[in-house]
Length: 636
Image 1 (cartoon, rainbow, N blue to C red):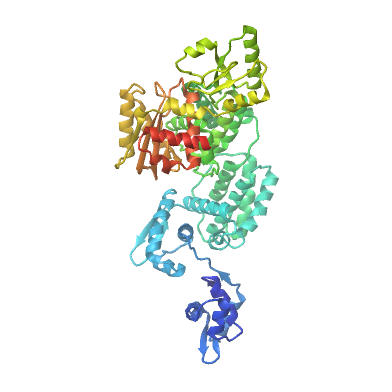
Image 2: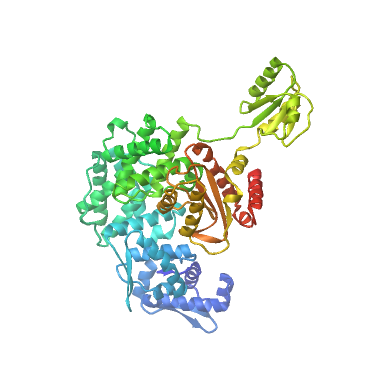
């Protein structure tokens, strides 16, 4: 018998061998006597089918009365199990998914609502997310009047859906009752772990801990489905390595023994696919003969070279890493096996250059193939491309401080001072060297600050006085100016302007926004007519939402003539796929300024980490926006 909550289990334990009045029960359970009476009613409902009831004897208390000793004895022999009632919305969705996936009969929301102590309306609301989850696997729920709802779909999709769900739950809580009691045969995971480990060891298959755990979960799911009469049929897999075939055969034989049912060839073939899709390979490029993998690697590297002017074609290490990864990736995308990428959001934020390059290349390749490569898979490829870029290019643009040196002494002294400064601060650039008289004639100073060998008036930039043989104090004063972050404020100054700033305080669709902004940029000569379709296409591939209501729409490739950022504040929000964007930065980036402009992403990541969206949306004009942006940059 499964108790709906711990208190009922405790109450049942108290009254099994002892008669207790309701006042004493209330005191022990720290509840009211009214709650005790309600709990007794609930317990009697559960005990009705087990030949026993709790009755109230006046003056003594509640006492156990057994009407059918045999049925009650069987109840006492079985171990008590506590049913965990889903409390949060997410828990209810998970429980609903499991019930539909494991039920051979129709389910009624009324029955589940009564079991879980919630209203039918609450579960009806949860069903929207349940249906959306099933739709990813082409599973459908059909409703029949007076019968309830039942899930329909092919067996392969059923298992994929259940395994992915349990994998998600296992990552969050590996002791969850959905894993230990509700979804799988009791003890199935504990049985499968040593069998899978032994098979992989014998066959020389390397796999990450997470990959091996996923295989164990799938095997536990298969064990239950096969045991309940739902075998796989009609599936054949392409040839895989001999050691993968051997491991799949060993595991299939173990499953056949555990379920006491014969396994079809489809079961073993699907096991081979799962193992091949997750094994870790460490082989030389010459040993990899996957034509699809070779084609895709070459296509990605050629695309990056021709569209972004980064030549990675000769990087043999990168090619080897990509080939090793893509060989198993092709197996996953061919059979629609999902491999979660827990670092996806971090990859998007910290590798924006490699992310856009890889996404554009993969999307272009995808137009010529039947495969769909998910965001998770793109993220794994981005890590390899990002490392390759860091090996060959200085992709982290930084604006170095530019200095004006004012000196009236001889040429040799000037050179000595210049050499000393560059030795101490090699990142500093001495842009000009002028005399005191020339300095006084300057209307403004274009450099970041001024170093002078004599006392001079300060114009619009800071001045540091330095003797030909500077003291430690003077060098420290220069250092404070040199080490200031000038990159992000300079980018804000260069690529943001009032003409490309807009506040939208009325409802507007994403497409209407793109149409208006791109039309203005085209009219001003920043972009050509192909920019708008490319922005729409890029958005259709994967949402450009960065997070915290910040969106970064841009084109596929570098289609702008000149680089500019169009800033849009939408306090009411604009629907952006499944999310709402309140701060939108439309990026138009040219080839000539690409590497420099990619540092703009640092600005947006700073806004994200600062959670600056609400403050930015309060700006009434460009000047206020710029001031708030500068304030965010100065604090981070």
